[in-house]
Length: 49
Image (cartoon, rainbow, N blue to C red; front, side, top):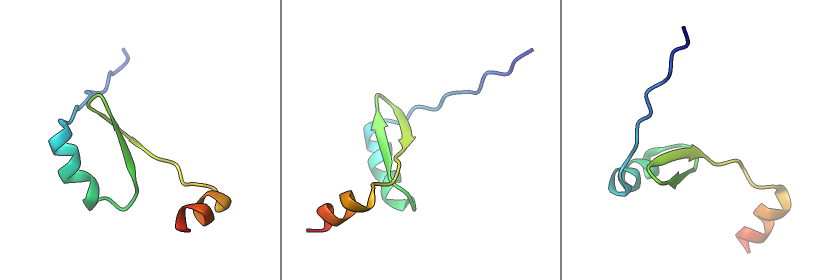
């Protein structure tokens, strides 16, 4: 028997309230939340300018 995890979906309002309290960045898409990967060193250098 294989256990299927329960998917928890957030409303956009829930996500906007929750995301600033997290240590890493997340992406919201159609009720699902995904951890974002870090940018490369060149990307970070450009983003800071």
